[in-house]
Image (cartoon, rainbow, N blue to C red; front, top):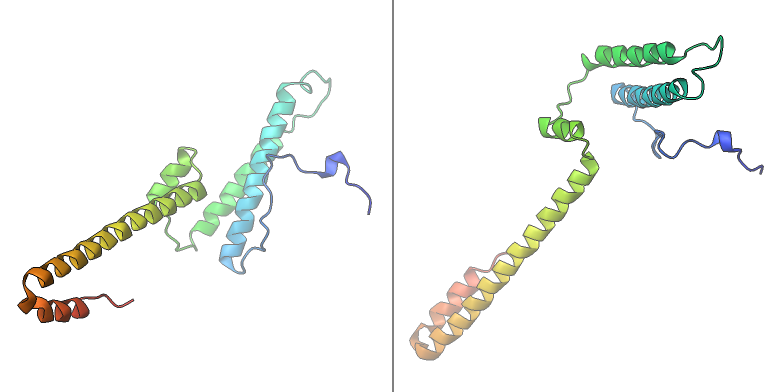
Length: 162
């Protein structure tokens, strides 16, 4: 197996395809078009950088920025045409987070971690209440032995099913 050349490796910040194939149908076509748009935007950015630095002084050099912009506009037009056939709704909060340069996956992770933390806190409260009830039942049974049978009936009937 021949080693890969430096030119065949993508830049570390370039968009890459996902590990799984795109789904079939309109959703898959949309995903592929979004990937193509991301690629076109990346290519436009690199072309702008190249044109504004080392390649601007070359005599007779053809500027590629216009072609790259046309490519981006073409992908945006295709996405606009596809949007009329898509009924999936995206929450505005997600779009606002993306506009504010926040990664939706990171936000999802943070929200799941917060929910897990709150769940553990609530489970702790429930355990504390059960423990308090147990000690209270013992104290009532010790001081009021005539109520012990009623305490046993209530505690066996109020246990949540797991």
